[in-house]
Amino acid sequence: TLSKNDAWYCSKCKNFQQATKKLDLYRCPEILIVHLKRFVQRSSTYREKINEYVDFPIKGLNLSQWTLASSGEDDAIYDLFAVSNHMGGIHGGHYTAYARNHVTNRWYLFDDSRTQEVNINAVKSAAAYVLYYQRRH
Image (spheres, rainbow, N blue to C red):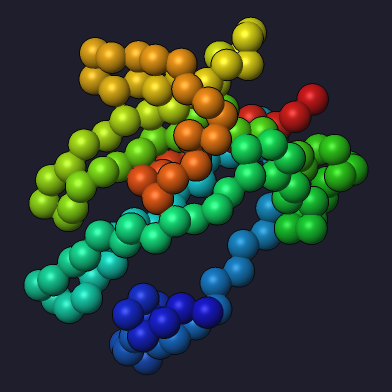
């Protein structure tokens, strides 16, 4: 349910209303991109960065319970292959990325001109901004 800060604008009554969002998947895409809401509008002139840690699966994200026309549960299983990160605030910051090499299954940090191999647990942080998943075959 959307809070008062995220109210939906109703074009019929011309007012902002609290509402419940619903999303149905008819079939699962090959690539699933999840954009985490990291900024909130506090007033007409004030926005703020949300720095809360969001726990997300690295392997085995199962969307079968939200898929209407899936031919089976296996069609709705995803594994993470990349994460975009944002560090900093609303008026400035720095972006980095983690990505998994599909041949070696090793994870790497990409930070401007620097690249280094990292432990798989490093990809989960409060800086995560966009998650990239591939459907398991």
